[in-house]
Image (cartoon, rainbow, N blue to C red; front, side):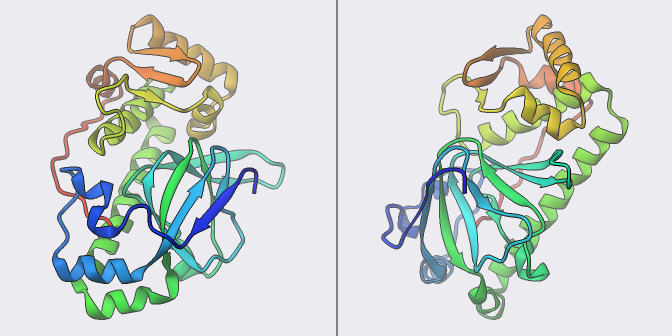
Length: 252
C-alpha cells in the first residue's frame, strides 16, 4: 500500500453516534437494525491520502462503509493506463463486489484521509436472513452504483468533452453537498486534472483546455487543493444532467 492504513478495533464512532445518521439524506435505522449493525461492525479503518484500500485481483475478507473522506475506484490496463470508474464518498459501501466475485475486480484509492467502518464479509448472509430491510438496502446501494455507471457511460459515449467535465464536476459536488462534506465552506473537490482525464477518457492536454473553458465561464476556480465549484446548477444545465433527487438513501 502506498500510504499508511490503520485498522483499529476500538470505536471512535460507535454506531449509535454515527456521524452519517446526522445527515438528513440517510434513512433512520430502526433500533434492531442499529443493534445488528453494531454487532456486524468489527472496527474502523484509518487511511491516509494516497493509500490503496482495495487492490484489484486480491481477496479481502472485509466490507467497508465510508464514514469520512474521498476516494475513487479504478481499473488498470497491463501497460499502466488507468480508468477511474467512480468516486466513493461518505455512506458508500466498498468491497461488495468481492462477495460475489471472490477476487476484487477493481482497486480503491483515497483522495484524502479517510475513515471507514469495517464489516466481516462472511457475516453478510446473516444480514439477509435476519434483516430483510437491510438486505434490501444493500441491493439498493448496488443498484444505485449501476445507475451512476450508466450515467458515466453516457458521458463517455455521447457527451462532448465540455459536457463530460461539467457533468462530472456537478455530479461530484452535488453528491458531496448532500452528505454534508462542505459544511458551509467553499465547494472544493480534492481532484487533480489527471483524475478528471482518467475518468473521462481524455488526454491531460485536452482536459486542461476544457477546464480553462469552465474557468472562463466562471463555473469553476482552480486552487492548490483541487477544483472549487462556483455554480453547480449551471454546470448541470451545461451537461444536460438533472441533479434533483430527494429520495432517502440507506447506509449500512
